[in-house]
Every structure is written in C-alpha cells, then in structure tokens.
Length: 521
DNA sequence: CGTCTTTGACCAGCGC
DNA sequence: GCGCTGGTCAAAGACG
Image (cartoon, rainbow, N blue to C red):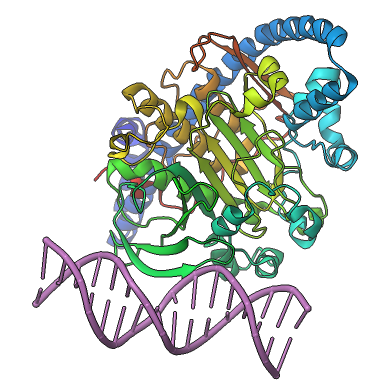
C-alpha cells in the first residue's frame, strides 16, 4: 500500500532518470529501473518505520504522562502504607519487605546489592532524583544485555541456591552446557557459532495439562524419549513436522513435583508459516531466538565482565518476566515456583501458566502485593529468561484444556484468552526487540499497564516487526500504572510499576528470524 | 500403506 | 581415560 503511494511521489524523479538513461544503452535502463524499484521499496520502508516511530513516540509520551501522575499517586499510597507499617511490623518483617522490593528492581539483586550497584552506577545516575523508592524499582537495563561475561563467570554456588523447591523440574527443563555456551559466546562474531548459539534459545512453558503434550497448534513428531536424571517422568523429544526442514524441537516433561504440570521446552524458530493457533507460541520461541542473536551481535568483548542482575517482570495480573543470561541463577525472590533454569548456558524463557492456588506469590508476600500488586520486575542475568504467566492470565494453548475439569485452573474465557494472547504478544515483543529492549519495553508494558487497546501490539507480533522505536527518553522512566480492576475480584488497586532507563537509543536489530513466516497462511 | 510411537543404540560433552 | 548424562538416530512395531 505504502509502496503504491510512494510510487506517485517519486515518479517524476524516476522518469527523469529513465529519460536520461534512455539515451544510453538498454542495460543501463534496466539497471536504472532496478534502482528505481529499490528506491521505491526503500522509501516505502522508511515511511513505514517513520510511521511506526511516530506511533511509538506518542505511546511513550502518553506513558510518561501516565507515569508522572501515577507516580505521584503511588508515592502517596506508599508513604501512607509505610507510615502504617512502620508502627506495626517487626524488623524482620521489614527486612522481608525490603528484599521483596529489591527483587522488583532491575539491575539490583538482593543477593548482590553492592555488586549491582557498582555495575549499574550509570543507572543510579539516572535515577538519583528518584531516590528511595525509585531506587528500588528502577530498572537498569544498560549493561544487562552485554553478553557475556557472564558467560565467562561461572557461579556454581548460585546454581542451586534457588531451586530447592523444584530442583528436578529445573533439571528437566534445562540441559545446558556452560562450556559450550562459553565457546559460542566468546566468538560472537563467528556466524556459525552464532547459529549454534541461537539453537540454544529456548522457551519453556509450564502448564497444567493432563494430556501427554500441550496442543500448541503445531504438528510434532516424537523422535525420542529419555529418562532424565532425578525425574521419574521421562522426557519426550518432539520435532516440528509442519515443515520437513523446520529446526524447531520441543521437550516435554512432567514436573516431578506436580505431575499435573507439563513442562514444554521449545527450541528454535519455525521456518514456515504457522496456523494462527500456533503463532503465539511460535512468536515467543522465535523471539527468544531473536533475543539471543541480538545479544550476541551486540555484545562487546570488553564489556563482558559485568554480571548482570536478573531481569524479571511480574504482575499479579499474571506476568512475571524474568531475563537472565548469566551463570548466576535468575533471582526471582518472591516467585519461588517460577521456573528458572539451572542451565546456565541456554537462554531460556519460561512461561509459567500453572495455576497458583491460594498461596499465590503475592499472597505469600503481602507487602509485595500491597505495594505493587501489578509490578513489572526486571532483572537480568545471563543464563535464562523466564516469563511467568499465572493468575488471571493463566490459560493454556490447549484448546481442549478446559475439558479437563479436574484441573484447578480457571476456565478459559474469551477475555482471558485474549488477555493471554496480548500478554504473550507483548512479552514476545519485548524479547524480540531485545537490541532496543529498553525502548521496546515501553510498548510491551503499555500493553500491560495500558488498556490493552490494541496500541501497537498486534495479535501476531512477528519477530521481524520491529518498530524501530528510537525515541530517546530521559535517563530513567518509571511506569506506574493502576489497573482498573483486579483479577481476583477483590478489587484492590492494582498498580503496575516499573522504571527503566532509556539512556541509549539503539536501533532495532532486524531479527534474523523470519517474522513473516508467522503470518497467516 | 503411510504415519507415528517406542526403544535401544549411538554420539558428544562434561566432570572426576 | 572413563563413566555419566543429555540428545539424537533409526529400526521395529503399532495404529488408522
């Protein structure tokens, strides 16, 4: 469409060129017409990007506006709560609260506060004016995605510090070989190695499902089964059969702790069109791939020494998005059941669709729920990425899922499904736009904290649909949004809060993944 | 008969 | 070097 519009615009110039070339030989004419086409398409592309840019700019300004007002309100509420609590709570409970709050921060981990502070000093600079609370909540993405280093730093002690709860599951979900990763990441410019690396990008989905596998819309062929160590349940290996050349594989395994939970780990990106029902998952997996690729491409050897803190976004509305790339375990302090991987070399995204019962995360952590019922929690390390969806958003890709009435999940309604789709889409977008993660984040967050009004997050966010959001922001931007309603019917105010620095505008990396493959056939 | 699953064998990486 | 483990292959069987 834009191309056709563009056609008329540039027609005169092109005609001139043609006229000119008519005087020359025919080959030249052909060449010129070729260039003409290229010019046309390029212009169209530029216009597209410009449009998108404008749209996202508006989006961001809107968010910033909202942020300002909500921040004000949030601070008021927080202060009130603080005053109330300060008289009631004991030092120990206060400590808990603090750690929970720390876990909300990007670039600060409660386990390594000092380290993080040092490493993200630039973040502090940007957030100093916020002090206190914002310090806690600020997201420092600046150095988080520098590949690396992290890789070179092995942190075995941290490996099992977190998963006492589900060690087997983690084993089941992940199988990484740090040394392998090390090799591939060290020579990031090596294309072959990069490919090897991208193969390791994984998306893990935890869902309650009684069926042997989760119906994600794709066709799979089982090619193997293995007993995983430490897990009584066998792990099944599937390969995508939609296209014979499709590299996508998935592993399916039951959670040893809860057999009703199915852990599906996807690896690779589809190289073929997918049915609409499969696009969400496909987008997510390919986005993970994209993220990994962009990381490796944007990594700088010299910056490799910084160990990033885990990045996680969590909301009571069901989103917990954790990015971690390092050997250090992702630190989701108040999401003990979120599936983070022990595997340190596989960047892994975990979608946790399991239904939390009464002991949901936030119920367990009243302060977190009180202060940030809908909080976006970013932290990053370099070993895995986990995205947890639960509560209201929990649902399944399995269309027949609701038929398993014994499962404690909520019935999948059209609303929640749409919500899930949007959530996945947004999360996918975030991942996909990793090179411009900071800016893209805004778009994704808008989907969550905004009204889901279709503001830019499409149903099928192809990985390649990079918006090219280059809007420059201030040093840090905090989103603090109140949800109009809560999913649990209690009606508590749901504030989503996230802040992150937009200290640098990166051009979005064209994702190598063919986003268009995911378009409807 | 074609497709899919099962299952033992094989290979590579890793730790000791 | 050896054993363990994860991942894959491929032959055989099951199924529609």
